[in-house]
Structures are given as structure tokens and as C-alpha cells.
Length: 390
Image (cartoon, rainbow, N blue to C red; front, top):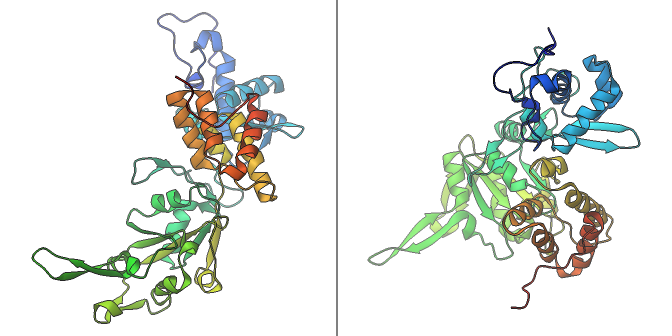
């Protein structure tokens, strides 16, 4: 393996260094980048091979056989500035690759045959690509157990192991389920959800009379599809009881409103539910909790937020607010949904308006806390978004 360090400048047009792509820096040539470009590739590929590890500079230097810790540190700082790595100071300088860094590393020419590690111990498997959702957005799979959340949910379905997802609104629970199951049907739970929303009801037909239209629970059972019960703990417990016969070993329900029609679940039928513990009115009963073998806590992926363009100060403010939320010091904290909304507003209206909007969407009893955290981390006085004078 030779090092691309030509002794004389090359002839012909400059060649863009792939390591600089997407960083906002000026493309370099092999003549000007020399060993530094080659070192950047080795560092990036090594981090991509260890996506779950937070590595010290010295560890990386030894692993890739680099002669200079300082040069490796400079490459790592470039990666962090580009959003391709997270820089930890605790107090040692340590780095972990982000999803954006993994995606970018996939475009670099390899320095040696390589596989991408997905965990300590066991074999090596490729990190799955982002998965499209029905609305066209991409879901970036996250680690779950020995694999990835989308794959593990699919495996639990084949084993008929029901899952209850819980966590604050906006952390990606619904997105994960949509990515895992293209055949998904959904019931959005509220305090007004009734049994008919699951089983179906009579609807008027042209020319007079009524026809019974089966609900999503019946359709999922008959077609072997997945039913997501979103915000399940907002649904009155007596209504949720309609699910329990479908989830036991028999997989049979009866529809009293349609002449006691019997419905038998076929292979593939599966129920997964979402639960937001902090939402007013949410009640997780023992009857509901006991029906789900796996209870999976879903939180916001801060590295993913940074990789998707959320500025570091805004992410840091959100992390602080979530710590305060856990400690009971505030009533609300932004999650991934709100942070991605920040990016959208910033791209349309500018940073100042996006910060003001993020403060404005906070509930009134938490708005001062959100404003203070954003102001502290961004160094900018912030007030909720509002119209000004003519």
C-alpha cells in the first residue's frame, strides 16, 4: 500500500479530496493535501468501523499506525466541525462518529479491506441504510440489543412478542414503527376513542340503508398486518379491553354490533403500542402493561439531531432541558421532532426566528425555562416568536 504523496505537482485539473466533501471547506488537491488527506481517510474509516465507541486520540493514532497524535487530532477536529464526529471533553479529548460521518465514510476510497462493526463481541454486520417512511422522510435505525431497532421489531413480530414503546412525544416512536412495518395500520388514541374505532361501525350507503365497515383491528387480523395503537394510555381502559382477546393465544374477537361476527387472526398479525408517560391524562393500567412482553424506552438521539443539521448550541440546550425534565425542574423539553422543526424554520426564516419559534412552542409553564436555556447556550437574548409593528 503506497502513500499518495507525489514529489511534484500533478498535471491536469485539480482532483477533489473526498474527505473535504460536504464540509464547506475549499476542495484540496492531492498535491496540497498529501498525507493529510490520506490520514483523514484513515481516521474517518477507523471511526466508521467502531460506531459505538468513544475513542481517545491516542487510541486512534495507535490503531491506524499514524506517526503523529497531533495530526490525528487535527483530522478529528475537522471531522467534528463538519458534523461527522462528536467531540467529547471529559477531560480527555475523545471522538465518536455520527450518522452523517458514517454516511460520508461510505463514499471514501478504502485504505484496506474493512467491515463496519455494529457491536462489541460477536460478528460484524453492516449498519442498515436509512429507511423511508410513508411520508417520504427517512428513519435512521438505532441500536437495540444486539442489532438495530427496525430489524429487532421485525424479529419480535415473527416471534409474536408484543412491544410497548414509551417516552416523550417527538422522540421517534411512530417513525420507528412506520419504518419497521410497511403494512402498518394505526389507531391514534385519545380520550374520545371508542370501541367502534377498532372494530368498525355502520355507515350510510347511497340509496338508503347502512353497511358495516370493519375497523383497523379487524383488517389487521384478517390480512396479517401490524396495528399500532398510538398514545394507547389516553384511551379509556374499558375501550382498550377490545384488544386483549386478539392478543392472547386464541387470537379471536367477536363484533357484537355486527351480529356477533367472529374474527380469527391470521399469521403476521401483530400489535405494537405507543405510550407517552408525561402527557396529561395518560394512564398505564396493569391490564395493558401485562399484555406487552417488551417495554422499550425511546429517547431522542442527540448525535442524529446534530447530523441532521441542528446546531450544537441548540442541541446542548435541549440536553440540559431534558435533564431538568427528568429531575422535575421543568415541565417540558424539546425532542427530535421540535429540533428538526427548528431546522425547517431556520432554513425559511433565519436563525433568530427559529430560536424564537422554539421558545414559543414550549408550553407556557415551561417557556421561561426553554428561553433561558436557549439564551444561555446560544449567547442570544430570545423571546417567543411574535409579529412586530407595521
